[in-house]
Length: 194
Image 1: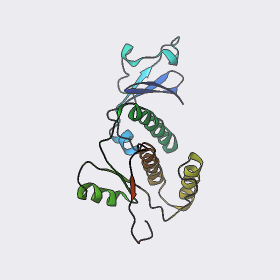
Image 2 (image 1 turned 30 degrees about the horizontal axis):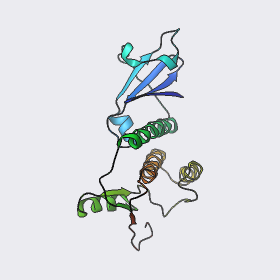
Image 3 (image 1 turned 180 degrees about the horizontal axis):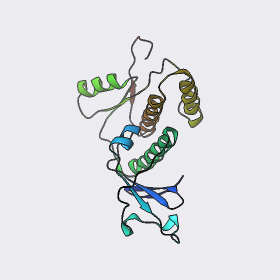
Image 4 (image 1 turned 30 degrees about the vertical axis):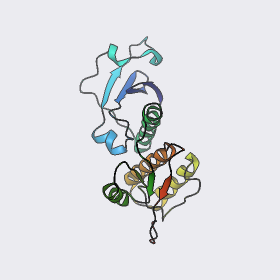
């Protein structure tokens, strides 16, 4: 699927003449649930002679009553593309006031640290149970794909696998966004998940 960026919008060429426009609301990374339940989507139709590369949604009216269907793996790709763009914007716009970064192995523990630690703080929680499945090269696309494939073959919930995969990628993006001068504390316990 072809894409084009026009901040705060990202355009997806869905069909030969159909453009999906997603509006980025914040510089927080998004999940599948954000896109499906609360996504700021509009659909537009390209004129027969209009190339996608020159399209600007402000010069057109959105299609009324128009909907689209995307398979889970393609929706996951849309989320990745949007998050990649958000990451670029974060790097160019965002500064952190945190003095240290805390990394913990569950979203629940991350929530507890966010409440317990005094500001300014920056806490990253890994969303998946890393005690199951492969961890090989988890910081790379091929390692994430290997893990995703294993989870698809060995667990029962396809939708949850995509949600978990996207959340894992979000946590990895957040780790990559950490400024090099900040110290990092990695929290762990003596349970199998950590």
